Image (cartoon, rainbow, N blue to C red; front, top):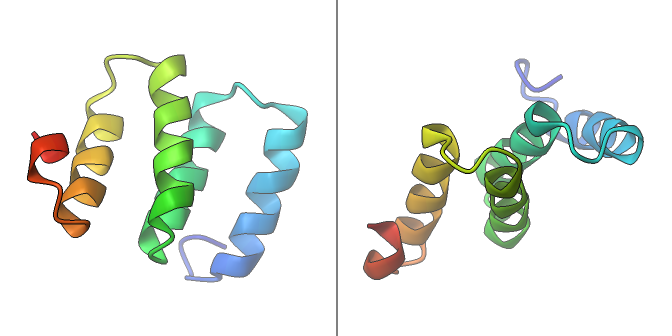
Length: 79
């Protein structure tokens, strides 16, 4: 669903998967990516911060948190 831009269906799938596998990095990360893609920055930040706890040194998570900070105009967090 995510690849074909069916974001609502993607979100529903990720919610079901996260209910079963709450600490799966890929599901948490993709939930954040989906939220970021549709501009839900608070939800995306929550997911990416959770992903960072699961995989603390993941560059993709850091890059996405930085992207969100830039979109919000928070250049200090963007660094």
